[in-house]
Image (cartoon, helix red, strand yellow):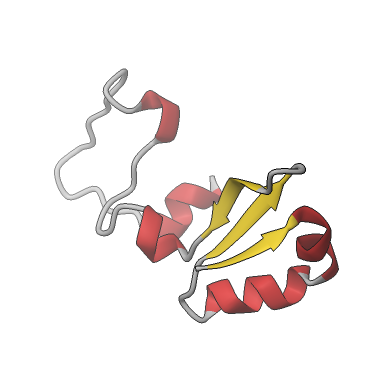
Length: 79
């Protein structure tokens, strides 16, 4: 993992995003001690595959649909 200080990250933001787009992770460090405060990673590395999780509603709410109801993930997220 490549790690950049905040100032360097700001200067090379587009290049850092390109690294992430190519499947690599990029760390961001902050402060005099250069502590790692963030990691940018491709979505496939950090998000569950195969389903849509409704974020803060997970395990707090549920819903049912009629048999045969279909909606694409794109349409669901756009509404």
